[in-house]
Length: 182
Image (cartoon, rainbow, N blue to C red):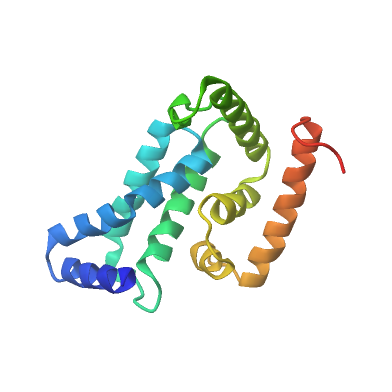
């Protein structure tokens, strides 16, 4: 149903209903922000990247191909915007404290925070193409097909890149002492 709703909103927007795009933003803003955050690792920067992705989508809405899901299209734009942003800035080592859940006890929060920081640091050690497939698969839970649509690469390449990314991430986690060598 979501894809049908998206197509209705896209068509309304293309027919001059500027308010229709607000519905698309509302529907996809969380996913777009989350992928941006996972790639850029900064709350404010992720907000800027997400906003930029929606602006680009609005400007290029007439190029949207209705054979594909709007979600895949906007997600691809967001990933590209995030990667462009990362490539233009210097790496940062900070983890946004607002991402830690307050629903757990202090000891659990400390452990979770430390583990998240270690994983985020390890993810940053991956080249952007590999980091992106890890984020899309394991944090956004996209299928191989959806990842291929978002990244504009063959599904076979997605699988190969993900295999390599997992192996590299495992090596980094072992190197940092986060997991034991098996």
